[in-house]
Amino acid sequence: MESYDIAVIGAGPGGYPAAIRAAQTGARVILIEKEALGGACLNRGCIPTKTLLASAKRYRALLNAERYGLRLEGTVSLDYARMHERKNEVTAQLRNGIAQLLKANRVDLLSGTASFTDPQTLSVLQDDASTSISARRLILATGAESVMPSFLPRDPAILDSRAFLETTELPDSLLVLGGGYIGCEMACLAAALGVQVTLVEMLDDILLLLDRDVRMEIRRAMKNELGIRLFTGKPLEQITALPNGTVQGICGEESLHAQRLLAAIGRKPITESLHLERAGLATNANGCLPADEVGRTTQPHIYSVGDLNGKMQLAHAATAQGLCAAEHACGLNPTPASTLVPGVIFTMPEAAIVGVNTSQENAKETLRTAKIHFRGLGKALAEGETTGFVKWIEDVKTRRLIGAQAVGAHATDLIAEAVLAIQTGLCAADITSAIHGHPTLSESWMEAAHILEDKPVHAAPIQKKQ
Image (cartoon, rainbow, N blue to C red; front, side):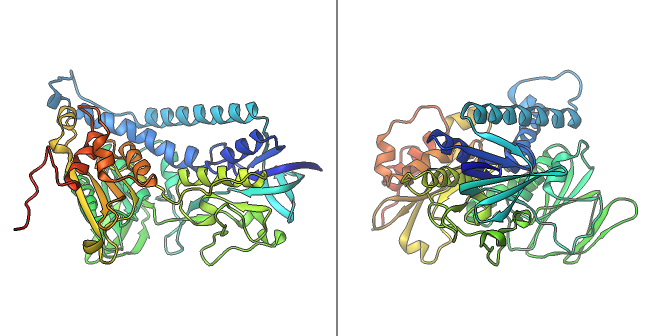
């Protein structure tokens, strides 16, 4: 039986960085993965979706080329099979990059399904054989998978996000169940490529983590620019897979019908194959394996990071937690992974959020906001991307920036400045004193900060109360 200092289970965005960081401290490390390097994010989620969205955006840009003084000879058509092929090329390139990094850092890689034999021993199943591994410390980064609720029929016409991304043909019509970030991203992707999309969310609105003004921008674009039908506040009921290969359901008094149904109502941690009970561990009521600020479970030598611990199901949060856990497992004294985690949503338009939002109780008394619309920015007008805005949220007492949201072109990139500002405790004056390049979209943060200082330059003057 091989013995290691650190064994990491799961080679996604939480696991493989943890393995690399542990190896960099001089530890002997093994990384165990049952599928492909990069995990769900690289192979079945973040990267495939964004690659296809990139194709969809370019397709829509070509359809609207005349706005920019361009004339195309003939008609514009799409080849979704080629888009799918390019998606696979991108993911393969990134997987190869991870493999090279692991090799360069001398991390042993083992393909198979790992389960506990006892608190410090793993059995790794490979086809019909098994290998035993022992380790002083173990980092669990098994990720999560789509929830397919029992009320949905099991039928080829009903897909989860993984199956949808694996198909090489687009349906003519799509019914999306769930208005979270996965459902909304998939709905925008399909609609941008010409699919007739209907989205149903049983809660009062889509993307409820965002402030209402941000949600309204996205709803408006989804309905008016992409033609998506949105039903919120009521569940989809009486879902039936029909003999002709299509799906139908009832939402309120409306009968909905589509060629395919995409279930995007959440994800659950992957734990079943681990046999956690053999390690003296148990999941909570939500199926997660809780961990402390450095990733330790109730068994101090076993760490839980990423989607598994239930803190936040985001790839970049998993990476931060994985690096922290690896350093702690190797005897270092790391700063716990930051809890200030940006949310980035690749709808059309994009949206992003970090820190406090304005939905909290007494927000009007304790918070102050300022926003700048893109339609007032020279760069946005030049690019033809005038939808959206950025918004600062300031604590009235301390005058510190404690939250920010953005919606529009490149919102998911723009949020980085806000993350850094909030994490370092900056005030509006710190933003306005930093010269921002012109013409850029990023100068929107400076302009919004000017408003918080009651010194707007490219916005209407502040009306003082008499």
